[in-house]
Each structure stands twice: as C-alpha cells, then as structure tokens.
Image (cartoon, helix red, strand yellow):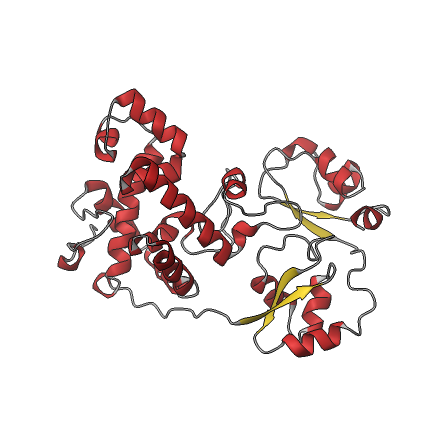
Length: 335
C-alpha cells in the first residue's frame, strides 16, 4: 500500500526535500509497510538517546537541522551498527575516513561507536563536503560514495546537480537512492504522528567521567562502580577490548551518574586493575587473517580455529566475533 504523503511534508528546508520524488515515495511506502513499520518505530524511539547530542552539535557547527535524519538512513539510530564494508556506528564512518577526521580506530578503541565523538566528526565531514560541492544533495551523495567518487561522476557526466547525475545513471544505484531515501526519512521524522507513528522516545543516560591512571579491566570497573558489565560497556562504547587502552594514562572513562567518588574509592583498594583474561572477544576487521590475529594475541591459528569451530582459516569475515585465549607472553607485550 502506498504511503500517504501529508500536507505537512511541504515545508521550507535548508536541504531541499521533495515529497513528490518517486523514489522518495517508494521509500515512504516501504517504511510504512507491515514488514518495516515496527522497525521504523523502534528506530525513532532509539533516536531519543541521541537527539540532544546531534541537535546541539548541528547548532554549534551551523548545519541544517535535517541532518539529524541522516542517522536514520545510515544506521536507524543503532550505535552498534556495523556494515559488511566496515562502516561503523551511528554515522557509519569507514575507518580511513574516521581517522582522517581525528577519531581513533585501533585494537583498543574505536571512537566511531561513541555517539558524541562520532557525531562531531561526521558533521565536520558533512560541512567539508558542502563546502566542496556547494550543494547539499551532492554533499549527501558524496557522504555515501566518497568525495572523489562523486567528483569523477560529475566530471564524466558534465553534470552540475544531483538530479542530473541521477537521471543520467552516472553513479551507483545505492547513491542514486541515497538522497531520496534521506528525504523520506526527513518527511517521516518531521511528521511521525501523521504517519501513525507514536514513539516513546528513549532518554539519554547520564554519566560521570574519570581520568584513569592505568589500564582497567571492564569487569573490575563494573564491580567498583556498583553496576553491571553491560552498563559499563554501554557508557564506554568506544572500548573494544576487555579493558581500557594500555599505556594510555589519563584515559577518560565513564561511570554511572553520581558514582564517581565511590568508584574511585573502591578502585583504590584493587591491587591488580587488569589481570590477563582467560578469554577475549575480537571483532574481525576487513583484510584480517587468522595468522595476524594469532600473532597479536601471542597464540596460534590452530588454537583460534579450535575455540571457534573454524575448519577453514580463510572463511573468517569482517564483523565476525572470535573467542581468543591469549598466550602466556601476551600480558608482557601489553605492558
């Protein structure tokens, strides 16, 4: 059933939004389909956790308010989103792009998963793209395809606007659909009730920040903060390992609001902040090989294969979670 485009969709936007665009209408119909509507509702409910962060940064950087809904296109407001291509977080930044924007992406931390840091970086990138192309639709297309890709498309087609590029099939279909999909998300986001969506928005979670003098096991952190491991991981989404980064004094760590003093007091009584774990979880990265992972953890390929029931060492894929038992020399290599 085709989605109804309500009168409220026709309003002034800094980034042009055309509710009559046929691809936009297709996406509206898809989002409102029986298969997708509940998913969309949950996504907008999740958005409540991040709206204040994103809207505040949009205002600071002087960017259009509509860009809030780019997160719906990219990740459906899922801060843990991870694509097959290796893009991650709310804004689905690629590792190279994230590093270029000043985010850390390494073994210990991946700041693409931190909503605040990732938002700041993504909006900085969008601002740069708009400066280069002087057109928001082209900037959004470049966010999806890369600035060099859109640059080549424009040069090849002699086009000067996204609509011309799209009509000429001068870019991949994913990018041709990216801007109409964004427009559909803006329309939905600005008219939720008119589309039968009544989300109960989740609220952001308060926290205290602590500068750690040395590496800290997350389980020990949870005990010291009188909370559970899930909460600690949720408050510190950029931490990828079982502990905070080694050799990083002053690492900023988050604990539940109001727990800072008691956390520090209990932590002062802990002799060993980071004992070697029996088992760690590792997310496979693009171009990873078991031999490289084994070397990093001072273990063997055969041990990793055995612990993960892997028959073919070449069968691992980006995003896969492996269970790894670090070798005896691993603790020494981290200190």
